[in-house]
Image (cartoon, rainbow, N blue to C red; front, side, top):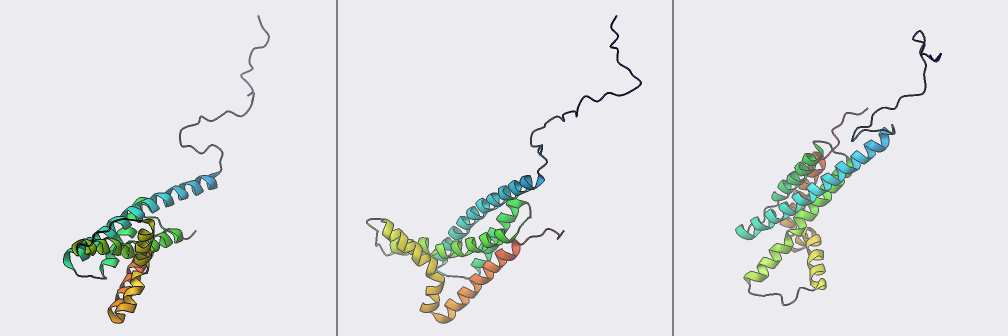
Length: 185
């Protein structure tokens, strides 16, 4: 018989046991890199939702103006709300400075880019068809659309200034909606 029988009176440690690894578990212990990656993923997700909301908002804004022949600047507040709400939905209510900047920029782009379908519709209604959609024409339309809130101020100072102010309110609305709601640590 062997004399190497275990002694149950004292414990023998051979090494540190390995913990089982489960999917989506932080193994390295580097919580900060995990949090950074999760924050980045939330941001990308929020931007995607914000872009989708900006496209929908721009289409609705342009469609309302085309159908009613009325330009209501308060619709910019609705567009800002739509974008802010979509971004908050994507992050389950979390926000922050970079979310605010994106929401404000998307609100401006959405409202100003609504000028493109309106312009194309007016060209269609007046039976002026574009023969060729060139890159130059598209870049001119985009440039006009981006500057349109300020061009309206030059065209009709009073109503243009009011429209610009309401656009600012819509941007501010999106800014406030996407503010950081976490408690300071």
